[in-house]
Amino acid sequence: MLKLWNTNRIEAAADVLRRVSTKVMDALERRPVYIRLKGLQCMPDRGTPPKAYVVHAPLEVIGGIDRLKRACQVIVDAFVEAGLVLEKDANRGLLLHATLMNAGNSKSSKTSGKTEPFDARTIFAQYGSEEWGECYIREAHLSQRFVYDGNGYFHCCASIPFPEEKQGAFPMMKNFFQKMFSTAK
Image 1 (cartoon, one colour):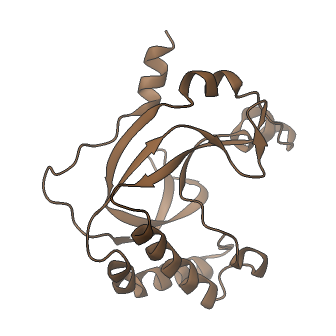
Image 2: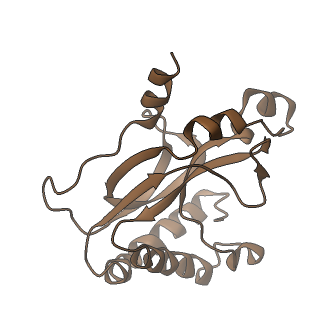
Image 3: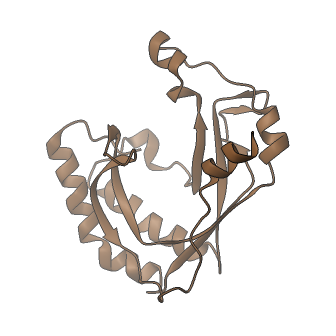
């Protein structure tokens, strides 16, 4: 994980991201990236369904994941080379996913300071094989954790574009939270 504890490091990371934009486009073979999210998993080493800490949807790149992994590795390597990643994190494997639930974000963990696992068995039983949807990935963001924009997402400090999609070539992802709450009634 990036360690961006002050403005100088955030600006340095933003600069690194912008500088590797061409290499990222090359790694993506200058072709658009489309993903599919399907199913649920517990984050490796972060629990099991009865005692989950982080539940995520695995990411599949339509047409093969190699291009996206190569592009991500270009970015990771540039951050490591710039000294923006702690040594212990520099060789961690890359897990492309969408975090759906994180016990660290619960009200009780924020008030007590202690993260407790939650029982996700019912969630896995109901949504474990759910097809969440497919979408086009427009850009890579350098996001600041614990700082949110007005739209509720992490604050974007910098971004680089991914190859452009052909107009209307692919459907947008379902709003899976809306779907989850509408079926729970």
